[in-house]
Length: 213
Length: 332
Image 1: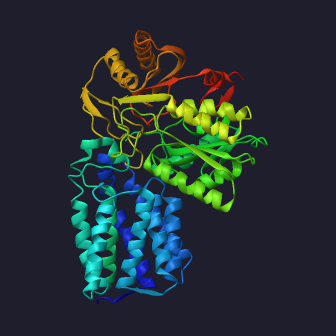
Image 2: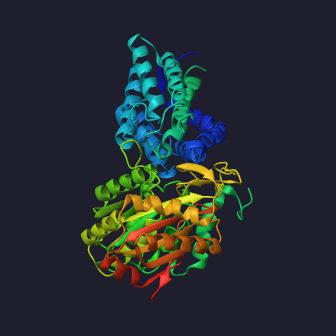
């Protein structure tokens, strides 16, 4: 069954599915990070998302903003590295944008994700083509907005966003990193997919899994 | 992976418990993973806080104590600590005279310390200044990178600036000195082997037996390039030349650190120190103080780094001042 809006329970299911996906891909994320970073992206994301799932289970939120802000704060305080502030800021800003509502339609969720991405850019100062999570999320949200303009619901928007994120993620492979630890490698960072773009794509994968099942 | 650990997940907690057990002069907040002096910060003394990923011991926890840091935040292995840890460290160490954050230039560390400073100022009104150490000449400092990494100079900076804070210099003076030290020193490192992150369970990179990696950082990240293994004299030249090409160290006394990466025996570090000292003498650099040993490591990586600091009179005087920490101790 597809969905026209996303409820609080589904947002929670989305986060829980994201935890499962980063857990499943932990070794792969760490492997990607070993090639051009410092071999901790898999374990960091798993630690952070485990903390998130535990936190939202212990303190059930009654509105989207409270839920997403709590996710952001938990990530900031449990992950460390660059992923902590970046993913943390993503969810914090999403929460602020979403407001105290019990469900979000496709346009509202797209706007919240867009606000999250703007937070990531403010914190990490990344631009398109820097070989970062931006390169997966930005095209995904462009696709999302275009689909919503054509009348797509959450499930349909999530599905085109995932395809765009995957394309963006794969397109990071030949790029020379200009941000983060991978940038120290210069030309040698080319030929590897960016770990942050890979984990960000899993966010959209988790959303598709949640709203289309 | 062969390591003296209980489980890969408990490495940091178990190591902090060990520091707690070994050092009654320190306190460890096991929840927030903050190491601080048992004796509270003297009223009017600026507090120095540093921190970063674990795996670089004795940095930073081993440098908490009289004459150096007031508190250190320990992150997971090679992962920056988080803003709430830094908040706790700030709370426990601030005497009212303000806090200097000493941050190594890595994207994660810089972002987490930035968030911590924003939170501290908004919530508690503590005055926070910071210095970002970026001394690694292996990395090009350009708009197209995250900038130079913070490596060995961090140790010398924590010693010198720690002495200034101990002397009673105020936050503005201590901060200005920290920037001056950062502007006056450079480092370059190399690896003979990769390190193995406990949670990853295998070496971060493959380095064939007959090859070495030049220009490595302290996280097992690949370096500038790799080439055939050579003798100590040629390796010393590969480390010293880029440093001297980057900055003029003549005409002023210098402090030199020959640092081990964690998996290299002292005997090899002395061989390397001798080669470095000869090269510096030939280049007209007057080395007046030195450190030889493991001070900023990369887990079990074999290799070394050289740090050179152009020291003015004040820096030398502060260098010689008493220090009493687990990792550095003299004059007491």
